Image (tube, rainbow over the protein chains, first blue to last red):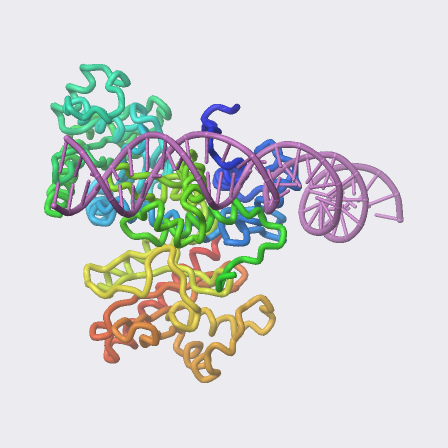
Length: 247
Length: 247
DNA sequence: GGCCTTTTTTCCACGATGCGGAAAGGATCA
DNA sequence: TGATCCTTTCCGCATCGTGGAAAAAAGGCC
């Protein structure tokens, strides 16, 4: 059993295998050959072939006969879009993210805590290289991103939110500092060349619902700039909070 | 056998059923109850439950215990995003779409011909109501959208493109007009209150690869405005073409 | 709170179907 | 051209997916 493998009690093995193949397709930049994906999934080529052609029949997967590679298909994209529509604040956040990007000239991000991790929902990229740890649809442990840290601090303030992730991921002094400043700084624990400044957005119940950030290369997101960027992000988060509160 | 049901030769039934459930989840605004989705899929509740919990175990589906509704999950979104990355022109198109939206104050779209239909890959919405026939991830028959019409005209000019959709969907005079103008107009065959002006983007082989458009309410996208909008869209498409050609 | 109805979840035996090895066909490369 | 590898098809077996039934949970009404 691999790390992160779902428990198999009561699940349909063939469906689970097909989903695993979809995940592998998703991670395969430039597509992947049948024998390679079968090997990666631990299946025989003929089994993988049958599962892939089943996914292909509804266009969750696609086959490129020229390169003989398999890819994620359009239906996966269409289905995935409906996930975004559930998070209704995404649409409201877009103009704010754009303005944030324009003001700072760095990449602007929207993320939410989903299943205990920071999940990137939207991203308005800057023109600079070195933009962010991961793109739309990517995920990170909360404590390794600015948005995650900001959310952890917001959860820590909420003594009654028993569903929040464990606060022990960040020290009490870090949490206190984030709360006091109104923004969190990620100083590149994962990638030392990237920095991020983030602030939390609250919903109509004053519950933390997501976070926004700007991220960019460490030499641009400098110490001299942090206070200014923090204030800009904090104000943008407040604006998004007030928009969401009106719904 | 329902209309549009994929042929079942050599496919795995349980996987096909699970994919069908995902599609139904995608179409269910506000989530859906187990018994309802089971009914829609023609499965017993216990079968649907097991397939859904299998999808849930890898987070392709999610269950809201408060409302007791099933939804599309985050992994579907993550996997779907990799479909976009395959169409590398999407990223290059974004700033152009934004500028297009800003100049015209209408919704800007990027679409491609995928499996014979017009598939919407990106969309920068305007602040107006009445924006476009469908959103990101949606699909339409080519002849019913401006982008599709523009692509049909481009395919018609390419006598050697044996993989293009049938040209008989539009009249010869329509195709000729679109080619001459450099843009196509959708005058609301599906929705009389919506209009669209679109132009084709070419890749480095001078092959039509996608189209961009602006769309909005018919009373705003007026006859008086068409020529001007057409020229703007055509120029934006040319710009995107030249960017893509450099890769 | 009790009762009724509906929904959701769990269980289990049976047979349908998923599996993978083998064979056939196809593609690539030296 | 021949060798090698990849992809697709075939088929028999036994695994596992199925759905009815039962149990548990939830919601609504009086």
